Amino acid sequence: MSIPVSYWKLFVAFFVVNQLIAQNVRKVSATMTMRTAHKGKTINTRAELCYATSGRMVTLFPKPAELYVFNNSNGEIKVFDPTKNTVLQQQNATYSTETTQFFYFLHNRKADLGLSSMGFSLSQTKFEDGLMISTWKSPTPMAKSIKRVELVHKGQNPIFMKYIDPSERTIKKVYYYEYTKLGSVDFPQTITQIDYVTAKDSIITKTAYGALKINEQVTSTLLDFVIPANAKILK
Image (cartoon, rainbow, N blue to C red; front, top):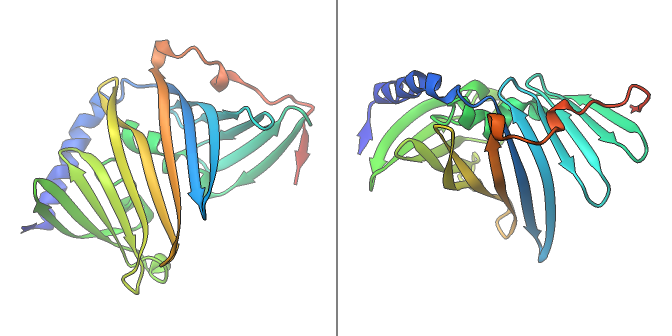
């Protein structure tokens, strides 16, 4: 059953009203386990991270050698290698913490998961089997690679996204599940992404968050970590 786009505006308004509730989360710490499978090979990555709703995120990758990754809402990223005392600096919008799951969910952007801010426009909303399915048309700069995105919500929470290219081939699927509460906010502890490189080749990445803590529960000092002033800057 299709419904007018105006209904979506009411849906978004509901999230805006609830945004004040979500603001009780100021910072989050978590462990992250990422498993990537491609062509029969699996790579496991583990990390510890801290995210502040002000936009700062620090991630520590302990193996094979310690690396600290710092990024913020402006798209600035720094990678610090304590063994070599070097720091690599770059800036790109794709590095912004406003493209992370923590931003989308803790800032109540789960109504569209950042699609509108990326220039996508809502073209259709419908209900099927108790799920709300919205279709988003890509902006002109992306039209050569992405034709549209389909976003599925169960209740207030997104559970699935699908990216479709101009030839109607599905090029990416993302699943959100195992929701838990962070303060008053629903947050997916597990996200599985499937990138279809070709019709017969795909990369599957499963990211799981554990030991989630908020505000005063956070004991990690990652957010306070400062890169030494004498670290050599790599270009």
